[in-house]
Image 1 (cartoon, one colour):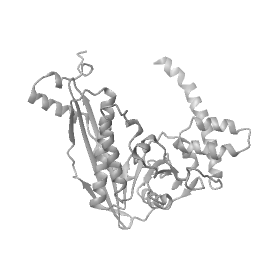
Image 2 (cartoon, rainbow, N blue to C red; image 1 turned 120 degrees about the horizontal axis):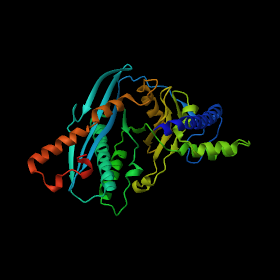
Image 3 (cartoon, rainbow, N blue to C red; image 1 turned 30 degrees about the vertical axis):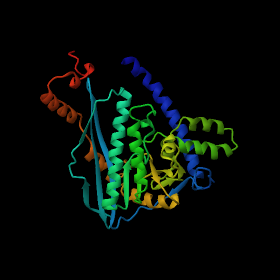
Image 4 (cartoon, rainbow, N blue to C red; image 1 turned 120 degrees about the vertical axis):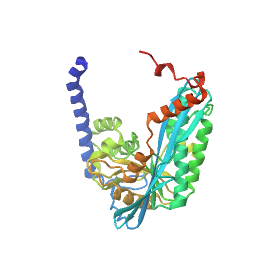
Length: 355
Protein backbone atom coordinates (compact mmCIF):
# COMPACT_ATOMS: atom_id res chain seq x y z
CA UNK A 1 0.00 0.00 0.00
CA UNK A 2 2.88 2.36 0.82
CA UNK A 3 4.24 1.97 -2.74
CA UNK A 4 0.87 2.99 -4.16
CA UNK A 5 0.74 6.07 -1.93
CA UNK A 6 4.13 7.22 -3.21
CA UNK A 7 2.70 7.22 -6.76
CA UNK A 8 -0.21 9.50 -5.85
CA UNK A 9 1.59 12.85 -6.37
CA UNK A 10 2.58 11.87 -9.91
CA UNK A 11 -0.93 10.63 -10.70
CA UNK A 12 -2.47 13.78 -9.22
CA UNK A 13 -0.22 15.99 -11.39
CA UNK A 14 -1.20 14.05 -14.50
CA UNK A 15 -4.91 14.45 -13.72
CA UNK A 16 -4.41 18.20 -13.15
CA UNK A 17 -2.63 18.61 -16.49
CA UNK A 18 -5.34 16.73 -18.39
CA UNK A 19 -8.15 18.60 -16.66
CA UNK A 20 -6.44 21.95 -17.22
CA UNK A 21 -6.22 21.22 -20.96
CA UNK A 22 -9.91 20.27 -21.07
CA UNK A 23 -10.86 23.41 -19.18
CA UNK A 24 -8.94 25.61 -21.63
CA UNK A 25 -10.61 23.89 -24.58
CA UNK A 26 -13.99 24.19 -22.87
CA UNK A 27 -13.55 27.91 -22.25
CA UNK A 28 -12.53 28.43 -25.88
CA UNK A 29 -15.67 26.65 -27.06
CA UNK A 30 -17.72 28.62 -24.56
CA UNK A 31 -16.61 31.85 -26.23
CA UNK A 32 -17.57 30.70 -29.73
CA UNK A 33 -20.55 28.44 -28.97
CA UNK A 34 -23.10 30.91 -30.34
CA UNK A 35 -21.11 31.68 -33.48
CA UNK A 36 -20.59 28.23 -35.01
CA UNK A 37 -22.55 26.64 -37.85
CA UNK A 38 -23.18 22.95 -37.29
CA UNK A 39 -24.85 20.57 -39.75
CA UNK A 40 -25.16 16.89 -40.69
CA UNK A 41 -26.58 14.78 -37.86
CA UNK A 42 -26.81 17.97 -35.81
CA UNK A 43 -30.35 19.37 -35.98
CA UNK A 44 -29.55 22.94 -34.83
CA UNK A 45 -26.76 25.26 -36.01
CA UNK A 46 -25.48 26.61 -32.67
CA UNK A 47 -23.64 24.62 -30.05
CA UNK A 48 -25.70 25.85 -27.08
CA UNK A 49 -29.19 27.17 -26.33
CA UNK A 50 -30.62 28.87 -23.26
CA UNK A 51 -33.60 27.22 -21.54
CA UNK A 52 -36.16 29.00 -19.34
CA UNK A 53 -37.61 26.74 -16.64
CA UNK A 54 -41.31 25.96 -16.82
CA UNK A 55 -43.51 27.65 -14.20
CA UNK A 56 -45.08 24.29 -13.32
CA UNK A 57 -48.61 25.60 -13.27
CA UNK A 58 -50.91 22.56 -13.02
CA UNK A 59 -48.33 20.18 -14.44
CA UNK A 60 -47.77 16.47 -13.88
CA UNK A 61 -44.23 15.13 -14.19
CA UNK A 62 -43.87 11.37 -13.99
CA UNK A 63 -40.77 9.26 -13.52
CA UNK A 64 -39.98 5.56 -13.73
CA UNK A 65 -37.11 3.54 -12.38
CA UNK A 66 -36.43 -0.09 -11.65
CA UNK A 67 -34.62 -2.10 -9.03
CA UNK A 68 -32.86 -5.39 -9.70
CA UNK A 69 -31.24 -8.04 -7.54
CA UNK A 70 -29.90 -11.24 -9.07
CA UNK A 71 -28.37 -14.39 -7.65
CA UNK A 72 -27.06 -17.60 -9.17
CA UNK A 73 -27.34 -20.94 -7.41
CA UNK A 74 -26.07 -24.38 -8.36
CA UNK A 75 -29.05 -25.37 -10.55
CA UNK A 76 -31.07 -22.20 -11.08
CA UNK A 77 -30.87 -18.41 -11.23
CA UNK A 78 -33.11 -16.05 -9.30
CA UNK A 79 -34.09 -12.51 -10.32
CA UNK A 80 -35.95 -10.10 -8.08
CA UNK A 81 -37.05 -6.91 -9.79
CA UNK A 82 -39.34 -3.97 -9.25
CA UNK A 83 -40.50 -1.18 -11.55
CA UNK A 84 -41.96 1.89 -9.86
CA UNK A 85 -43.52 5.09 -11.15
CA UNK A 86 -44.06 8.36 -9.32
CA UNK A 87 -46.15 11.26 -10.57
CA UNK A 88 -45.37 14.70 -9.15
CA UNK A 89 -48.39 17.00 -9.29
CA UNK A 90 -47.41 20.68 -9.37
CA UNK A 91 -49.53 23.79 -8.94
CA UNK A 92 -48.21 27.37 -9.16
CA UNK A 93 -44.66 26.08 -9.12
CA UNK A 94 -45.09 24.03 -5.94
CA UNK A 95 -45.37 20.29 -5.43
CA UNK A 96 -48.90 19.54 -4.23
CA UNK A 97 -49.15 15.76 -4.34
CA UNK A 98 -47.24 12.62 -5.33
CA UNK A 99 -49.00 9.62 -6.84
CA UNK A 100 -47.37 6.19 -6.85
CA UNK A 101 -48.16 3.48 -9.37
CA UNK A 102 -48.81 0.58 -9.22
CA UNK A 103 -48.62 1.14 -5.43
CA UNK A 104 -46.89 3.22 -2.77
CA UNK A 105 -44.94 0.11 -1.79
CA UNK A 106 -44.71 -2.09 -4.86
CA UNK A 107 -44.11 -5.81 -4.30
CA UNK A 108 -41.09 -7.05 -6.27
CA UNK A 109 -41.50 -9.63 -9.03
CA UNK A 110 -39.67 -12.94 -8.66
CA UNK A 111 -38.35 -14.75 -11.73
CA UNK A 112 -36.72 -18.18 -11.58
CA UNK A 113 -34.54 -19.25 -14.51
CA UNK A 114 -33.68 -22.91 -14.85
CA UNK A 115 -32.11 -22.61 -18.32
CA UNK A 116 -28.34 -23.22 -18.32
CA UNK A 117 -27.35 -19.58 -18.91
CA UNK A 118 -23.73 -18.53 -18.86
CA UNK A 119 -22.85 -15.82 -16.33
CA UNK A 120 -22.87 -13.20 -19.10
CA UNK A 121 -26.21 -14.38 -20.51
CA UNK A 122 -27.76 -14.33 -17.05
CA UNK A 123 -26.53 -10.78 -16.46
CA UNK A 124 -27.90 -9.62 -19.82
CA UNK A 125 -31.18 -11.47 -19.34
CA UNK A 126 -31.66 -9.90 -15.90
CA UNK A 127 -31.09 -6.40 -17.25
CA UNK A 128 -33.49 -7.04 -20.15
CA UNK A 129 -36.18 -8.23 -17.75
CA UNK A 130 -35.79 -5.02 -15.76
CA UNK A 131 -35.96 -2.83 -18.89
CA UNK A 132 -39.07 -4.65 -20.08
CA UNK A 133 -40.83 -4.06 -16.73
CA UNK A 134 -39.93 -0.36 -16.78
CA UNK A 135 -40.98 0.31 -20.37
CA UNK A 136 -44.24 -1.61 -20.09
CA UNK A 137 -45.00 0.40 -16.95
CA UNK A 138 -44.18 3.63 -18.81
CA UNK A 139 -46.85 2.89 -21.44
CA UNK A 140 -49.40 2.19 -18.69
CA UNK A 141 -48.57 5.42 -16.84
CA UNK A 142 -48.98 7.51 -20.00
CA UNK A 143 -52.36 5.91 -20.65
CA UNK A 144 -53.66 6.19 -17.08
CA UNK A 145 -52.19 9.49 -15.83
CA UNK A 146 -51.45 11.48 -19.04
CA UNK A 147 -48.40 13.24 -17.51
CA UNK A 148 -47.11 16.39 -19.19
CA UNK A 149 -43.74 14.64 -19.24
CA UNK A 150 -42.63 11.14 -18.26
CA UNK A 151 -38.96 10.64 -17.39
CA UNK A 152 -37.07 7.35 -17.72
CA UNK A 153 -33.85 6.58 -15.88
CA UNK A 154 -31.73 5.71 -18.90
CA UNK A 155 -31.99 5.93 -22.69
CA UNK A 156 -35.19 5.58 -24.69
CA UNK A 157 -33.89 2.45 -26.38
CA UNK A 158 -32.33 -0.79 -25.11
CA UNK A 159 -28.85 -0.51 -23.65
CA UNK A 160 -26.22 -1.50 -26.21
CA UNK A 161 -24.45 -3.56 -23.52
CA UNK A 162 -27.60 -5.71 -23.26
CA UNK A 163 -27.75 -6.59 -26.96
CA UNK A 164 -27.18 -10.37 -27.06
CA UNK A 165 -26.07 -12.42 -30.04
CA UNK A 166 -28.90 -13.95 -32.05
CA UNK A 167 -27.64 -17.37 -31.01
CA UNK A 168 -27.94 -16.44 -27.33
CA UNK A 169 -30.75 -17.84 -25.18
CA UNK A 170 -31.34 -14.25 -24.05
CA UNK A 171 -32.21 -13.04 -27.56
CA UNK A 172 -35.95 -13.76 -27.12
CA UNK A 173 -35.95 -11.49 -24.07
CA UNK A 174 -34.22 -8.81 -26.15
CA UNK A 175 -36.92 -9.04 -28.82
CA UNK A 176 -39.58 -8.54 -26.14
CA UNK A 177 -37.80 -5.41 -24.95
CA UNK A 178 -37.68 -4.08 -28.52
CA UNK A 179 -41.44 -4.64 -28.81
CA UNK A 180 -42.01 -2.78 -25.52
CA UNK A 181 -40.07 0.27 -26.75
CA UNK A 182 -41.98 0.29 -30.04
CA UNK A 183 -45.24 0.30 -28.10
CA UNK A 184 -43.99 3.23 -26.03
CA UNK A 185 -43.09 5.19 -29.18
CA UNK A 186 -46.68 4.74 -30.37
CA UNK A 187 -48.17 5.91 -27.06
CA UNK A 188 -48.35 9.57 -28.18
CA UNK A 189 -47.12 10.68 -24.75
CA UNK A 190 -44.24 13.06 -24.09
CA UNK A 191 -41.34 11.14 -22.55
CA UNK A 192 -37.58 11.46 -22.27
CA UNK A 193 -34.68 9.42 -20.94
CA UNK A 194 -32.18 10.95 -18.50
CA UNK A 195 -28.69 9.45 -18.47
CA UNK A 196 -26.98 10.81 -15.36
CA UNK A 197 -23.50 9.41 -15.97
CA UNK A 198 -23.15 9.26 -19.74
CA UNK A 199 -19.81 8.01 -21.05
CA UNK A 200 -20.60 8.89 -24.67
CA UNK A 201 -18.36 10.90 -26.99
CA UNK A 202 -20.82 11.78 -29.75
CA UNK A 203 -20.59 15.55 -29.30
CA UNK A 204 -16.80 15.54 -28.91
CA UNK A 205 -16.59 13.87 -32.32
CA UNK A 206 -18.92 16.48 -33.81
CA UNK A 207 -16.82 19.30 -32.31
CA UNK A 208 -13.62 17.76 -33.69
CA UNK A 209 -15.08 17.29 -37.17
CA UNK A 210 -17.10 20.49 -37.53
CA UNK A 211 -15.32 23.07 -35.37
CA UNK A 212 -11.66 22.23 -34.72
CA UNK A 213 -11.05 20.98 -38.26
CA UNK A 214 -11.93 24.47 -39.57
CA UNK A 215 -9.58 26.35 -37.25
CA UNK A 216 -6.17 27.26 -38.64
CA UNK A 217 -3.93 27.16 -35.59
CA UNK A 218 -0.77 25.33 -34.50
CA UNK A 219 -2.76 24.28 -31.43
CA UNK A 220 -5.42 22.40 -33.43
CA UNK A 221 -3.63 19.03 -33.41
CA UNK A 222 -3.10 19.23 -29.66
CA UNK A 223 -6.75 20.14 -29.07
CA UNK A 224 -7.88 17.22 -31.21
CA UNK A 225 -5.74 14.88 -29.09
CA UNK A 226 -7.40 16.23 -25.96
CA UNK A 227 -10.86 15.68 -27.47
CA UNK A 228 -9.97 12.11 -28.42
CA UNK A 229 -9.47 11.34 -24.71
CA UNK A 230 -12.48 13.29 -23.45
CA UNK A 231 -16.09 12.33 -22.83
CA UNK A 232 -18.88 14.73 -23.71
CA UNK A 233 -19.86 15.53 -20.13
CA UNK A 234 -16.23 16.22 -19.10
CA UNK A 235 -15.92 18.89 -21.78
CA UNK A 236 -19.43 20.35 -21.56
CA UNK A 237 -19.05 21.03 -17.84
CA UNK A 238 -16.82 23.95 -18.93
CA UNK A 239 -18.81 24.93 -22.03
CA UNK A 240 -22.36 25.20 -20.72
CA UNK A 241 -23.85 27.60 -18.21
CA UNK A 242 -26.57 26.46 -15.84
CA UNK A 243 -29.83 26.32 -17.79
CA UNK A 244 -28.16 25.77 -21.17
CA UNK A 245 -28.54 22.75 -23.39
CA UNK A 246 -26.50 21.71 -26.38
CA UNK A 247 -27.75 21.42 -29.92
CA UNK A 248 -29.90 18.39 -30.71
CA UNK A 249 -28.18 15.57 -32.54
CA UNK A 250 -29.32 12.22 -33.88
CA UNK A 251 -28.60 9.18 -31.76
CA UNK A 252 -26.55 6.44 -33.36
CA UNK A 253 -26.52 2.85 -32.19
CA UNK A 254 -26.74 -0.61 -33.71
CA UNK A 255 -29.76 -1.07 -31.43
CA UNK A 256 -31.65 1.42 -33.61
CA UNK A 257 -31.16 -0.92 -36.57
CA UNK A 258 -32.90 -3.66 -34.57
CA UNK A 259 -35.72 -1.24 -33.75
CA UNK A 260 -35.86 -0.09 -37.39
CA UNK A 261 -36.02 3.40 -35.97
CA UNK A 262 -34.20 6.65 -36.79
CA UNK A 263 -36.23 9.16 -34.78
CA UNK A 264 -34.25 9.08 -31.55
CA UNK A 265 -32.46 12.31 -30.63
CA UNK A 266 -30.24 13.57 -27.82
CA UNK A 267 -28.93 16.73 -26.22
CA UNK A 268 -26.85 17.53 -23.14
CA UNK A 269 -28.30 19.75 -20.45
CA UNK A 270 -26.58 21.56 -17.57
CA UNK A 271 -29.32 21.67 -14.96
CA UNK A 272 -27.13 22.49 -11.93
CA UNK A 273 -24.33 25.01 -11.55
CA UNK A 274 -21.85 22.67 -9.89
CA UNK A 275 -22.73 19.38 -11.56
CA UNK A 276 -21.92 17.83 -14.91
CA UNK A 277 -24.48 18.00 -17.72
CA UNK A 278 -27.09 15.27 -18.04
CA UNK A 279 -27.72 13.59 -21.39
CA UNK A 280 -31.34 13.66 -22.48
CA UNK A 281 -32.66 11.17 -25.06
CA UNK A 282 -36.09 11.49 -26.65
CA UNK A 283 -38.29 10.20 -29.45
CA UNK A 284 -39.70 12.68 -31.96
CA UNK A 285 -42.07 11.59 -34.67
CA UNK A 286 -41.57 14.98 -36.31
CA UNK A 287 -39.92 18.33 -35.46
CA UNK A 288 -37.36 17.30 -32.80
CA UNK A 289 -36.62 20.96 -31.99
CA UNK A 290 -40.22 21.57 -30.93
CA UNK A 291 -40.16 18.38 -28.86
CA UNK A 292 -36.90 19.39 -27.11
CA UNK A 293 -38.37 22.82 -26.37
CA UNK A 294 -41.24 21.07 -24.58
CA UNK A 295 -39.01 18.68 -22.63
CA UNK A 296 -36.13 20.91 -21.48
CA UNK A 297 -38.11 23.58 -19.53
CA UNK A 298 -39.98 20.89 -17.59
CA UNK A 299 -36.78 19.04 -16.68
CA UNK A 300 -35.00 22.22 -15.60
CA UNK A 301 -37.92 23.18 -13.36
CA UNK A 302 -37.59 19.89 -11.44
CA UNK A 303 -33.83 20.22 -10.84
CA UNK A 304 -33.42 22.46 -7.80
CA UNK A 305 -30.13 21.37 -6.20
CA UNK A 306 -27.02 23.39 -7.08
CA UNK A 307 -24.68 20.38 -7.10
CA UNK A 308 -26.99 17.54 -8.18
CA UNK A 309 -28.53 18.04 -11.59
CA UNK A 310 -30.95 15.10 -11.76
CA UNK A 311 -34.73 15.66 -11.80
CA UNK A 312 -36.45 15.27 -8.42
CA UNK A 313 -39.12 12.84 -9.69
CA UNK A 314 -36.43 10.43 -10.89
CA UNK A 315 -34.61 10.65 -7.57
CA UNK A 316 -37.82 9.67 -5.79
CA UNK A 317 -38.49 6.83 -8.25
CA UNK A 318 -34.97 5.50 -7.68
CA UNK A 319 -35.49 5.56 -3.92
CA UNK A 320 -38.77 3.65 -4.23
CA UNK A 321 -37.44 1.06 -6.67
CA UNK A 322 -34.24 0.04 -4.89
CA UNK A 323 -33.92 -3.54 -3.74
CA UNK A 324 -31.68 -4.83 -0.99
CA UNK A 325 -29.46 -7.89 -1.39
CA UNK A 326 -30.99 -9.36 1.75
CA UNK A 327 -34.38 -9.44 -0.03
CA UNK A 328 -33.16 -12.22 -2.32
CA UNK A 329 -31.30 -13.91 0.54
CA UNK A 330 -34.53 -14.03 2.55
CA UNK A 331 -36.45 -15.52 -0.36
CA UNK A 332 -33.74 -18.13 -0.91
CA UNK A 333 -33.82 -19.16 2.74
CA UNK A 334 -37.61 -19.55 2.65
CA UNK A 335 -37.33 -21.57 -0.56
CA UNK A 336 -34.82 -23.92 1.06
CA UNK A 337 -37.19 -24.36 4.01
CA UNK A 338 -39.84 -25.65 1.61
CA UNK A 339 -37.83 -27.81 -0.79
CA UNK A 340 -34.94 -28.85 1.41
CA UNK A 341 -31.22 -28.62 0.66
CA UNK A 342 -31.20 -29.93 -2.91
CA UNK A 343 -28.39 -29.32 -5.46
CA UNK A 344 -30.53 -26.84 -7.43
CA UNK A 345 -30.83 -24.35 -4.58
CA UNK A 346 -27.32 -24.76 -3.17
CA UNK A 347 -25.29 -21.56 -3.15
CA UNK A 348 -22.20 -21.35 -5.32
CA UNK A 349 -19.01 -22.41 -3.57
CA UNK A 350 -17.48 -18.95 -3.83
CA UNK A 351 -20.33 -17.67 -1.64
CA UNK A 352 -20.04 -20.27 1.10
CA UNK A 353 -16.33 -20.72 1.71
CA UNK A 354 -15.69 -21.76 5.30
CA UNK A 355 -12.57 -19.57 5.52
